Length: 324
Ligand code: SF4
Image (tube, rainbow, N blue to C red; front, side, top):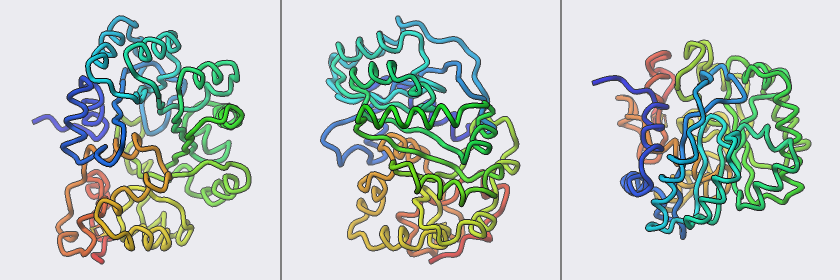
């Protein structure tokens, strides 16, 4: 069977018709704690950036015809929230018409996983928010030098910061920032955290690098957890989807918070319940679970540990993971 990367598996699921997406979420026990359900509209697309951990998909925008046909399915389903996912979903030349059509099909609220750069335009930000965009997940990979180098787009950091200001101005309901610790930003990651603490009020989630169609080799991007702990030990941040034995070193308070939850569901959904990360971004990571390493089978937290990405174990082995 052809080996599929994490990204290929995820994109396969996100392209399913809405009804099938709901079945997959149900299978993984997701969305069962919410009053409303959410689905995703995924289209491959051009991108503003050319991230070192991705490969810019030059492709063409899908026409509005196929997108509208997919949205029509919701006239029967009546789902309230739609998440827009692409390389840069808001860059679609007909994005406002797509949102208007989605509203006509019954969607009332929207989320987007986006670079955030387009919000540097205040008029566009206003139009998107007025159409029901309420949840925005934006990546930031460090201070200006590190971020612009990671996304290989000079000026990106400045636009994202301007965009965050406009989102605040428009009182956007939910704005989340996510980041990754990479070889390219590890050295100045503490400075980046200090910068966020001083002026950005939105929650930060630090997630592990997940292999997609990358421009650089995995080990040229992902430091070992030992290297990360050396720099960020005790930093107390929300390292989401990190193995719990590593999280305990990096953020003892977050580890204690998860461990002291009373039920299994509370432990698994700790970060979404506390609004550290958008539900959709978190759920995307849960759709492709990590198989447990042999050493993990004896661990007392195995049932709620996110585990170790197979790609990580292939490159760095399993010696860093100590059963708790
Ligand atoms: S030993 Fe394995 S199961 Fe236990 S915390 Fe570490 S990665 Fe998770």
